[in-house]
Amino acid sequence: MTINLISDTVTKPDEGMLQAMMQAEVGDDVFKGDPTMNALEERVAKMFGKEAALFFPSGTMANQTAIKIHTQPGEQLIADKYAHIFNYEGGGVSFNSGVSCRLLDGDRGMITATQVEAAINPPDFYHSPLTTLVCLENTTNKGGGACYDFEEIIKIREVCDRHGLGFHLDGARLWNAMVKTGYSPEQYGKVFDTISVCFSKGLGCPVGSMLVGSKEMMDKALRIRKIFGGGMRQVGYLAAAVHYALDHNRQRLAEDHRRAAEIAEVLKDCDFVKSIAPFETNILIFSVKDHIDEALFMSSLKEADIHISSLGKGSLRIVTHKDYTEEMHRLLLQKLKQVAI
Image (cartoon, rainbow, N blue to C red; front, side, top):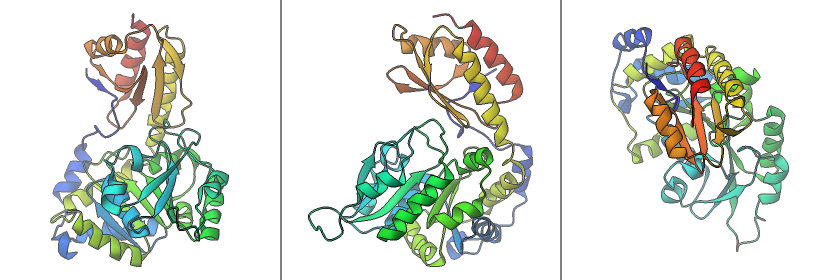
């Protein structure tokens, strides 16, 4: 039995999702003529209390589009040093928007209002880049699935308001954060100007992210998506998968969180484990002891058909997801206890 915990992006559509996709009514979305996608964009916008939403083939494109519509070349955004938009989007901030990043040393990928305020460049000091945008990530990928304190998000919003800054949320795993903390999409929508949410991670869809915001911003986003090559045709098949996921796969994210916590409990007692990073949701980061050869350890897991990812320097990552079943979970816990290095 293959146990793949490299990422929550490895999931495949289940039978119910496939049936929904095959029954979708479709049209040409480039001409906004796909009824299933139109309904989905309206649905997601309403969920977050926003005027409009726009579907994207990837979360990276959604984030890069948001940055483009919030900024002008030569300006600067503020983000944590772990931010996905800086570390894992191919340098798109500079390539697409001509914008630099002021990176802050937060806690597991999370920054504070005090840090943000201190990092804003004086707008009348023309020698430094003009600060125009703050970007948060929730949950944090590189920070091990950490969830922001919502009260801190509100404080950062107040800083943005005082200084006239845009406020964007990379919500690739926001569904996990909402299940964990209990805050609603509408509450997030009231705080952020734009939010990107991903459907191909915890919700188990094959493709897709959505950007939500004002109608004016989404009109601009439509043009930028075209420039980026993100226009698609009969995309209602993908929209149908998202409709199904929103109906069936949101609350079950708590199962992924439970299983990650149970894996952590077993790892605490394993001789090969040096440390386990704080965790809250479905991402678990741990380190093996210094004397252990990481490549040899990974090889031993692969021999048992267990697949996880390496972050380098002895740090490893496990991500639980929809296709990681209870049977796989029990088997993994048993095998971890038997690993000998």
